[in-house]
Image 1 (cartoon, rainbow, N blue to C red):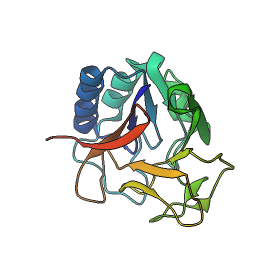
Image 2: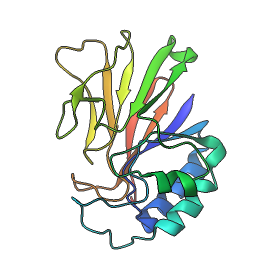
Image 3: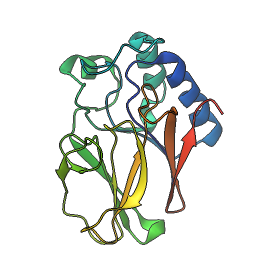
Length: 183
C-alpha cells in the first residue's frame, strides 16, 4: 500500500500544485488529507498564494483517491464545494501487507498525541498501529512515551509550515517518510 499524506494546505494554491505534481509522480493508492484544506484560520497569516478556488479544483480532480478528515478550520461550506467526504473527525485504514497495521487518521484537535499544540487524546489502538495527524504544522515520526508500539506521524504542512519546510508524507511498505516540497 502506498499513500501520500498531506495536511494543512490552508488554501495555498502554489504549494498545493507542487503537492499534486508529487501525487502524479508517486502514483499512490490513496491520498490522505488530514484537514485544514481551504481556509487559513484566524491564527495563521493569509498564505501569499491563497487561492482556495484553485485548491478546490485540484483536490476535486483526485476525489476518487482521497480519504479525508476534518480539521479545525473546515466548515460546512467546505463539504459543499469538495467532491469527497471531509467532515469526519477521524478515519482509518488497515494495511494487510504490514501485518494488518491500523492507520488512524485525524487532524490533531479532537484526537492527537499531545505533541506541540495537538490535543492529548488517544484512540484505542492495537500494538503496531499508527496515529497519523496534522494540526501542528510540524513534522513528527516517533513513538510517544506511554504508548509503546504505536508510531506517531505528522507530515507537516503543505501551505503554512511552522518548522521551516513545506512538506507531506509517504507511507509505503509499512514505512512512513517525510518529503519536502520544492526540493
